[in-house]
Image (tube, rainbow, N blue to C red; front, side, top):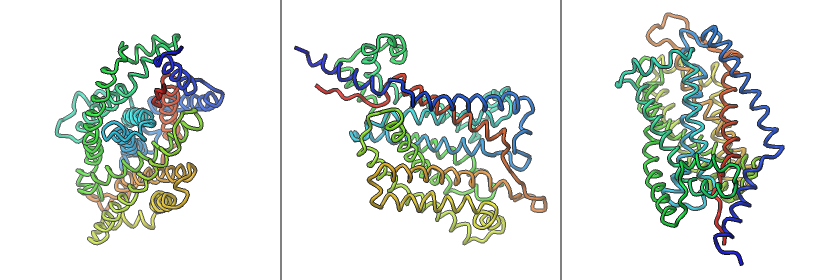
Length: 424
């Protein structure tokens, strides 16, 4: 007669095998990602590193382009993973536990990709160490470096303590990968009730700490722009709260999209009800983001300062009007309508709304970063700047995102990203 432990181990092995096995669909998705990453790496090494930033659309006027837009965007997106983890472990909301590990991996991936965008934005790799040699503690850029490293360590700690027990179980379920799981578990092999309970307590503490850490991370990222007085629309106290709220919205959207993709493409056992509950959180967050955007636009238009009105005009009916209205309509209004309609209970509706929000927040970040650089506040008689990303720039960006997707796909097949239930 089988003991309870044997039943649990068998149930775990069956569930783990379902999620960790490599199928043709997984291979078909990985191959184009490898090709895209390779092409991006070629353009970075043999184009940008060889000829410099002149191969990109960056210039004297626009020194922060799509590289920095993606950096700011990904820093914000990482918030979603930490928030879901905090709800699952800190608030002990059990229905979010199936996607907690997935969300944490997403947060780690986004932070790593954000760092890569900083790396490519400096032009050549030999300039990277200048940041550490000549950085000043009074600079928001150094604040951001410190908080990103601390936040990344926090996200990895959440991921480690959240998966350690299952990593130990994987040692027995997959003997050929035992060395890998032992390495990932840092040699930890204790599965006693006392050890599991200790991990839960540590997770709860880390989850509680992660909330103020997330607010601080996104506030400091906003202050990189918000403390610059010479750029129109940057120097505002609302930029920090706006970044925090848009980070929550975009992060939740990406967690939902990741859960849906993992459910259908990777075969993860994620309940539909869990995704529906995440959609409800997204529906509550969208109006808050809309309020902050409205408050910022009202402040700009009511004051009627010439420089502010010029940038506002470019955003409403000028060259950047397309991205502004797409962000407003497709990124806010349409997703909210979907999430309060009967489609809010369908994965198609929730996924569509999340995709629209994801695109909308990216366009919002583009307007915030690039548009103010076009207007010369201190030199009004000089011609306004212009910026068009080149093919090299776009290929490098695509290659970095392909690397992030590869990292996610490989991790999904190395160890379980969905908590395995112990059923006796």
